[in-house]
Image (cartoon, rainbow, N blue to C red; front, side):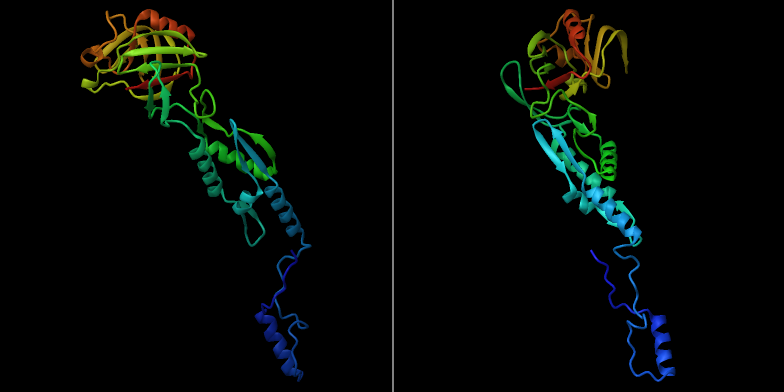
Length: 299
């Protein structure tokens, strides 16, 4: 775009031109000839303009194609052009707030952490499992920084966003076919690996009548540890197999119990953990990996 000279008058130059005309008896004053108008600070051939134009073109040439399983989201010049700010000195800035809003849009559309899931139980019933901390979660800060860097470099790339937390797979069923299922109502547990039942059996969950009900929701195994002592307000227990999935809540053996299942949990339940027989705990421990989904629900 060519520069516009316009008709903004330079007051000081106009005064001098008027004085000169009066002193010399000139009846006509041509403001253009006397250079009374303000000239543009920059023209289309100014070095600063050329550099700024090149930078803007580089920014809007950026194209990031986000991959979300079978779905895609494209960030290109049509969107980026609305984020560019040019000050009076032709310095280009990116509106970082708008960048973060875009990341928030991706997060709200594709994140699944803590989402409500329709889950088909081992008994064939479909239940709604709400809450928990399992699922996909985009890293707001890191992804915003990555976008800014890509725009500055004019990148054309395909990639996933940077995640704070990942799930087993993309799509509606992000749990996959390897998981632990805990039916609190039935007091039973199933452990699937690659779609096959590895172990199952009765459990004792948290005592709801003492405010220690086992958390409901979809979680994931934080880590696993052998031969440890669990401690809490008013209790200390040695266990052989410890598999936490939410703070100090986890799956473990309970050598002090002689029975599992039924309604034991309502009168003699745990402090929130999922107590299982030793052999069941051993089988799960030997086959489970960090990050495995753990679904706890009530019918």
